[in-house]
Image 1: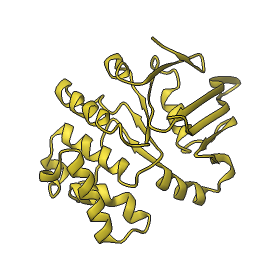
Image 2: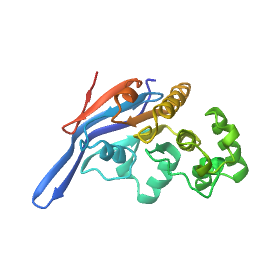
Image 3: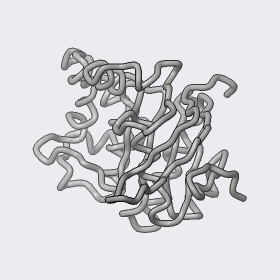
Image 4: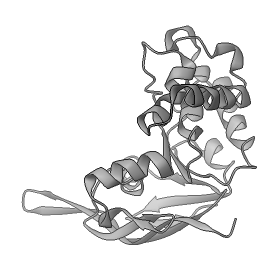
Length: 226
């Protein structure tokens, strides 16, 4: 777990509200090791989602930089950034964002198909991940035929199908009941053999407690949280 797969250096984000400047992140420095599970907590409005968007190259920093496996977001064009994001990152949100007209394996295979992988291979890899996450019997079901927890585990499979370096998760259990949330967390804990690192933004202290590191976003900085 010594290999750094994501790093922030001097990361800052500010917004202009008329004559006022709102400083969300200030000279933030952070690194994430391969295979590490880090939880980021903080009060509403502290900038957790802003930070996640910057880590994923979905937003531009006001200053500083984010690199994934040594590749800087700010040095990539928009086209290059999209291609690299599809290769190096996975995303899981509070709402699963599965495509209603596609079944489970088709949803999981979508990042591979977008990346140019042939359908037969994409299907095989998607089915492998669904099986690993205990969903092989649900592979041909559409999202409307799945429970909330099953839909979120399909979303996790979709995030992992291309074996990314990092998976960014924004309140992944926030829309689930306790039992379903626990099943998703158990799924993540069962992936410890991967070199994939996970960043989980959450307001749920019980979720954060299961991470390797727990950090709190406070006044634009990440500080260790017990």
